[in-house]
Amino acid sequence: MRTIGILGGMSPASTALYYDTLCALTRQRVGPRHAPDLLIRSLDFAVVEALQGAGDWAGAGALLNAEARALVAGGAELLVLATNTMHKVAGPMMAGVGVPLVHIADATAAAITARGLARPGLMATRFTMEQDFYLDRLRAAGLAPLVPGAEDRAQTHRIIYDELCAGRVTEAGRRAFEAIAGRLAHAGADSLILGCTEVGLLLDDDNVPVPVFDTARLHCAAALDRALP
Image (cartoon, rainbow, N blue to C red):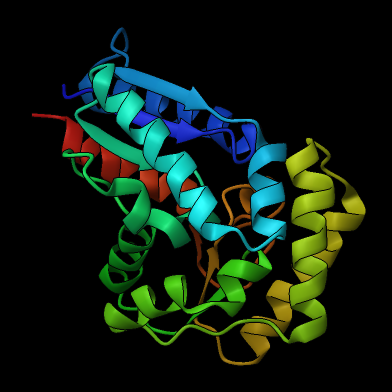
């Protein structure tokens, strides 16, 4: 197995999910006593959040580039960035790194198109829902993504940052997310992208009226596809 380098901590909840998911998938695919070959670099999310809030994406890209290089120096043979939002700086992050990046939007788009679906709703941070770096990647794969209205985007972003990224899972947050997902389905979404790696803490196929695509789990599966011989 090739060594997977995970650049995480954005937030710690999603990094823990990546570790658990990759371990479970490896047991399923290879055998019950097997585990993935991983290197994990977990950053201080408060530092990353401050760069996001200041709009200092150049600084964020430089930070992630240094950390990606450190993972490769430690032996990583392919990289995953355990966050959707920070794929905004995937290009600067990978400059001169020299190993492949498994892109989370590509893994998600491939899973949606494989199911014959084309109009996914997207629930994520405001950066991911409102900027082109992620939506354009989905459109390039032939999808026509829908995003929530302005009030729903603001509420989604707030719950992600104030609750999920702080390790808080509340019933009020779950009900709010269920309502937003329902409105997207009513607006014509034929599926739902859990477009922040923490959204799966609140939503799944049991409480969403359309098929759900959990980006964190799909990303892990795609990374393991690349890592296994």
